[in-house]
Image 1 (spheres, helix red, strand yellow):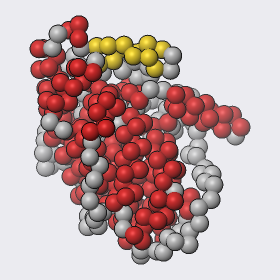
Image 2 (cartoon, rainbow, N blue to C red):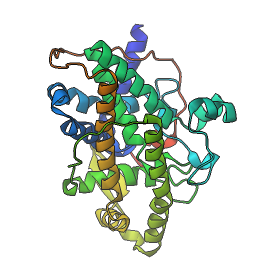
Image 3 (cartoon, helix red, strand yellow):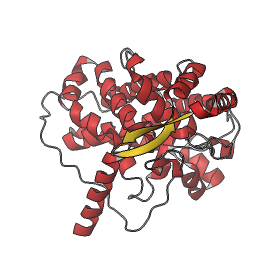
Image 4 (cartoon, rainbow, N blue to C red):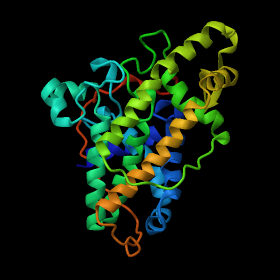
Length: 325
């Protein structure tokens, strides 16, 4: 047990000090998605969530921190739709039982399960609200935000997740971390009030398919830009954690961002809105319990059990200090 706890602590420390480009949406974006979603909640919920906003913000990246420690964690972050179907994937079975019957659970786990895992997390959060369990509410609400955010990333819907099949290696971190890191100050995070979701499964699939629809443009616009941009101006070096890191230059990043006409900002804003929608839906499905008497205390949430040994995961999630590895 002590050995397992030590492994968890080491992994968390390492993940905390890795640069933004090593993670889906980056630390910054995941944390801001969770934080801004709080302000779309109704008065009956916002007091509780604002009281706990620092936890909800800080722990938004926990699922990424354990991707290499927990067996089965990695597939929860993506789904390679192009392995199974061509957009709009009308014939792909959306219900878990139907998909398992068609492809087998092992196959689905190999190519990602994010829309279905969002259903699992919503059920857990609904149960936590019913039980008025502070720790379970915070853990599940916070981590639900991570998977909601991942489901809005176009490169989380393709086998070519890091441009490795089209000679665009590094585009994953470029799109979801480098661009928000550089241009987030111009983003408008006002998304309006949370709304009830009538069919959570259809909702999750609509978000994944909307992201998948944009995936070809994410790749083609960068490919076109690469063909016209001066090669010596495409990359630059920046200091991160006392190391010089090769990354896309600000000029190249700006040109790519402009070519997409606000796509990254739009997907982050959708993540914020849809996270607030899922929180509201879980709370209402639980009977709209009074949250005012759930007192904040120091949260000490039990981690999932660590399995020793190296856990397989997507290469883009552990690109470490250099997004081009």
